[in-house]
Length: 573
Ligand SMILES: Nc1nc2c(ncn2[C@@H]2O[C@H](COP(=O)(O)OP(=O)(O)OP(=O)(O)O)[C@@H](O)[C@H]2O)c(=O)[nH]1
Image 1 (cartoon, rainbow, N blue to C red):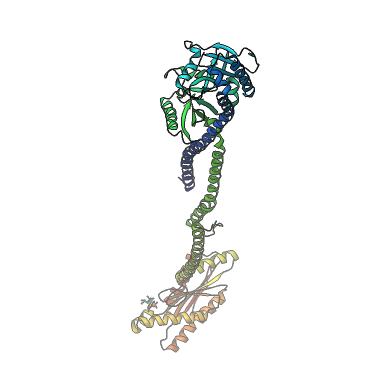
Image 2: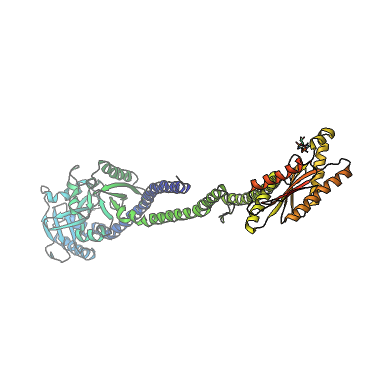
């Protein structure tokens, strides 16, 4: 697998791992953030909803309490049959009716159970006495229950079957100076409009409800859950708040919160919160106790509606885009800073391995790879330079060896191989130009005796001297050489027969004269042969050798010249 594939694979794996880890972290964090945010919102919402309810009820409760304290009403309640007191009381009631928001009131007397009522339409003007409360009647049980409990103030959601209305009733006990309960007064608020104004205000994702001290649902957007006439129901038959939850743990949790708040009822504005499931959706429940009315306010926040996780998806998109850009940038950097220079370097190494030192331009980023490429380039230059120098030296040496291979080491003349080449060239030239050339074959007479008498070294000296005299006796463009032993050959070119004879004689005379001067006189026998253009190498050598043989045979120390096809052959001394 290539480095590029590996690096990209590694990068992709890291990115996948980072993405999964980030996704999990995002899920955790976003849920945590939403929960923290939700708890704060729940607290604010609970306080806001509570304040809204209390604000709308406070005035009505105050007026109701004021009405309960009205001396005209209290006095009449103690003497319900007194017509004058009754008239005054009814006037008083009507003046309160004008003040109540609902423009309605009720007054119920303990003494005779008479129930008085008038509404906004002043429908019962002059006939405010509506009916007599009956302890045996379930619909009237609320009155007797409240009297029995002696609770001075009570809110009660109850349909009044006599009057045909369902209202949120504000019930306040009326006591005389001794504190004896003499009646009950209050007003009612239209439940539907109250629910609409205060409870079901149409904020999506927010559900508000109010439950009484026992947890019975009093105000809720779904009337079916409202525990009407809660006061008269025995425990266990009430529509308590836990009905809203399916999960037993949620039921326990919400009831637990109510208990906790009851214990901390003195701490105003304290809010308890926790997660519950309503209709299969996760909600955050915020609960506060409202001491002024003895109820609990519960706010349920549907976090998925208020702050869906999809709101945070742009974050995910930004993260993914950043990841993608990172991958691309990473790829480009790796490509340009590492992979491309390495691939270039690899190609360069391949070229050098194949013996070429002409490198293409290498990428040299300012990092270890760039430095490596730079070192490699310099190393290649040095290697190329050394190789060239080495090749030059080898060529020079080879040439030298070639030259030496053609040179006789003792005399410095051409050896037999060198003479063969010269002869070859001359034969070809003669064939090309149709001209002849000369060859002289020379042998020192009785050289063996010289060696024997004077020693081999002296023999060598004589060989060297003969070579010198030979060189001196020929023209600059002739080729003298040592054929072997005491035999020498001279190739004369260009040449004619006369020149051949004259040079042969000159050499013959020169050796004799010069050697005499050295004190060791030697003579040579010379065979000469003038070659024709069509002579072959064998023919030339055979004829020259034959001429020399004749010179030897004729008594040595003489020159014999032959020519191709020439009948003339003679010995000269
Ligand atoms: N000193 C020396 N002697 C050599 C060398 N090469 C050959 N010789 C000797 O040269 C002699 C050649 O003898 P031959 O050509 O046979 O005979 P020769 O004595 O010259 O008699 P002719 O040629 O018949 O006159 C031999 O004794 C060889 O040993 C050499 O390089 N140095």
